[in-house]
Length: 386
Image (cartoon, rainbow, N blue to C red):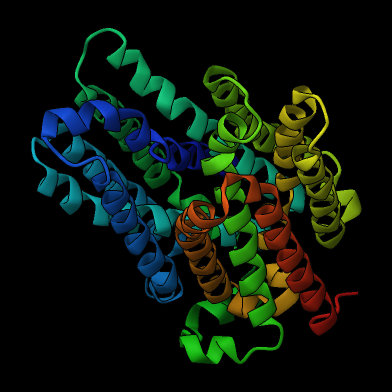
């Protein structure tokens, strides 16, 4: 029962992910905001998320993890309902911070709880459900916009869904306590939270942080710039490019569902290696200069399939790599690194492409892939696990 609720919570976590982007062309005109202000709102959400995941360990030691997750969903619900009532840009910016804070709390707490209490299979499926939410969110917004209704209805509907998820989490708080591991987990609940510098001194942590930074930089850069590369470098129509760029995210979601069937057998580290190898094949297909267009388009789907197991497997390995006592703190800093990579590197590629041309896209992805693979290998050597 609890596992089902956690899956639903991750669908809810994914729902707002692409909601702003789907609504922004309409919102921007109605609010009289410059186009680039969507980036400012997204940056404020990211700041809230980074602050929240870094605080997750302290919060879960003061109150139960289930309650932290429930309060995070409540913050998301309040923020999205605030968006639904907003009529000015400054209100959008104001609600962005608690939205990020709530999202980060839910993300960090549930990721750690699954990593400690469930198998790698369930971690893969957890992130599969996030992808499902991320795909449904824009469709929900489009449902209202295509019927001539205001964008506020899209945010209000998703906010109402978060209220339902909050009620479900509150009603199942007792299940979180029942599934705790008595002796070891009791010690972790009363132990003082480690500071950031204490965490960074743990053997192998820097490799883990850089692996998360590199992977999320790769995924976000591929997702954001794929359409532009297909149109301006490969001469593919904008309609086809947009369709296949969306298939990249569908590949991630489908790949995570499929990964759940083999991840327990192969283990986290082999799943990371397999995912990075498949991603390399996809990047090669995207890069091949004289291949037919369909090879390049198929390459995007292959990149998505390769990316699928990397993040869940790296996350699930956290308690094995660093121990259950420090896993919540480690999940927090790892996710902060992941958010930083996803936020900072795609704009960096835009600046690089402005100088060197959009054709540098597959080379840039290969560099990020090589860096991520190097950090994953470094983590394996620094923290050998039997």
